[in-house]
Image (cartoon, rainbow, N blue to C red):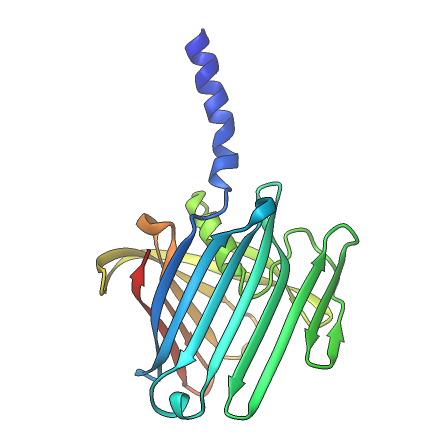
Amino acid sequence: MNKIKTLLACASLLPALALAMPPPYTAHYDVLRNGERAGEATVTLKALDGGRAELHTSTSGSEGLAALTGASVDERSVLRWQEGRPETVSWDFHQKVAWKSRDRSLDVDSEGKRLELRDKDKRWSPPYRAGVLDRHAVQVALMQDLAAGKSGELRYPVPDKDEMATWVFRTGASERMDTPMGAQRALRVERIRSDGSGRSTTLWLAPERGYVPLRILQKEPDGETIDMRITSLR
């Protein structure tokens, strides 16, 4: 009887454990533009005090025009966990190309149920929804859901100016991918867009490595591609 009680107690913890924060990691990527190497990116997920986490992506141009113009992007998301689900606390985005720069940010007040989205001097207040994520932090929620065994269509609330949009991802087949770390198994996931823009985003995530992305490919309507390919992971 005691053994049965112990098993039941352990089973009751499984959903909570499955929805825990993904393991911290640091990944390095080559960034290719239209098939040619343009720079490198470093993505770090780390735990913070108070049950929060930070996802930080730093991208810099090191080849060709990207190096010539000093192109760089720095993006940082702070998340909290509410009932096992990640939610953005704050998001900051800074992009620099030559003499031009762009700054965007998001602050989430879950108690006051308020959002403030900023793009330089523009301000928006989209409606609050529990589990709201900035576009950068969606990756963390996706990794967590896949680790919990979810599949099919996965949906996440992401603010877009004065509206709360829903980002939809669809899981696909498992593929074998050759990387500098050796052959890896990768789950293919595509973002489903209904706006007819012609833009597509495809991710390949590694089940044996906490669903860290091995590759992220974005295709623009004009045919331009941005391709991030992993080079190392720790």
